[in-house]
Length: 576
Image (tube, rainbow, N blue to C red):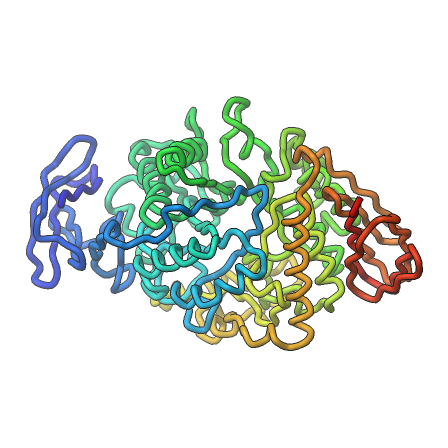
């Protein structure tokens, strides 16, 4: 077995074997690498690296950290897994329904194998892609995963490498693709040993979490290679079908070729090599079409990006919230703009930001935007992690589902949303260092000042009960109210699948009619017309002569007139 490690500042590097502490000296090579052949390291062997005789450190490319982020690495023969999915192909994003889940709270067991037990539910719901929140090993047993430090190693508490391989194989057996959330803008503060190996970070830029990863400063070539290799590792070794890049607005790179463009090119090439449909999705807070535009016109070539504007427009209409960044939204015209242009702020003035924000969306296609009424950020970054179901009745929840699932974009659902789960999704961590745990607790309380939320009401992220409260209660979905909403979600995914859009997919093909005073909105998607009444006053809709009707809320059909007594959605399905 040949081992290599990049340590350009070191004079000598050794492999330290567990449990006896034997040291094997590595030979210096080109470009700051050290390497050696080690026949003694096989599947299951635990080991460290030691630089210049210093304390042992985990492997920067460790495949498994069975004793946590501060423990030794363990070699795992990933190629020996017996896959059963050679014929599987992910559905294209244009026809996708994505389901975001957190492995630790999706079930009480909190493991990859426990997720498998509920895949039949997702298949029946009409999901096509399961999106896992980050699983790269992070400190402690519980956390969101965005403070991962061992980027090549699936989290041990979830089931490690073998558990992830079993989950992906089981998903593929049911026709479900798997997307993985990865974090390339920062690493967590606990167990982050990359800086001791080389210039993985730069002080040129600052992120909200500390120094940025070094993509354009001295020594950046191998850092870029590390991230690109990591992306391909998940797709190749674990048969993952695509990656979701966290917060790319915090990825800084002034190179001639941006790291995102490199990643997009790598995944395109790997897709051809493996003969599998692979995708790259970005979370971006920039409202910039350049992220998904082709490289030929100056873009990065990413397949799709999240649209927070859609969420904020829908959320403010349903809840009436206007604090913080929600102050830029709240009118039906904002939701209409999001449906027609993808972004509300596409160069318009943003009062919250105090300047014009966003860019032109003329080149965008609907399949390049991922939209949602809820996700881990928009629920978990609230003071008490409350979902829409905590304050809204079934009727507005049905409206949110209809606009999201039948809108022109790629819909994303957040775990438990489909039955109106009453479990909150809170922010939780498990840092072993008391000072770090206290810093996180204080920081979370400071964050909520602009929203007017009581900081004392924010649960302690380090309290195990905060985590346990966030676990889904799967028994809820059988109660009448929850079952009614779950059935509605299933009908909507059926409609989306049965009635694809008749347009070219360009945003300009979506036309929205609305009335700000009477609070209603109508738009078409192929042979579907979605009529949403957001007001409390009664309203009537004249229906087409040849149409099948699907309605929610307090509605009554009199001839060809549908009478609505409150918030409702009426979906007309043209049959001729």
